[in-house]
Length: 200
Image (cartoon, rainbow, N blue to C red; front, side):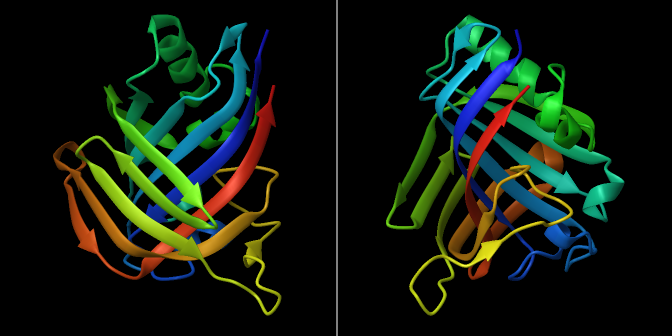
């Protein structure tokens, strides 16, 4: 039956602004440590309604983003029931094909998958992302002369394939994920926001 997902993305990493990974260049620090989350405003997977739920990742990218071999911990919204959790993991592990499978194909190892409480809040372009005790980020987009968010389009890499991304800065980014060897507490690094509509 496939999937149809529509919603918003928040992403933050330890690269400087703007993150070179999105245009296929090597990360600023040689590796990229990041977290991202999808808020599914409206969604269905194989007939299972997943509207209103969140799905997130903590990621260690060992080099160029397109070379893959990512190590990840996947997080499912703790409000999901069993069927919703299974459906979300199926899609974001790439088992349902489509654009999300292309992204999941860059993962070399899933270190863990667990449920977590999410805060995914965007107001007037400012975003707050929290995933359990592992992630806390505050971010806002850069804006152009008209006041509209600065957009990145036609980038070779994207966590929201087919959609423009709003490039920004995180005033705060904390990521503590011992299983990935990550313990960050940063200010003023890269952030990305965006809207997505993905189906297969």
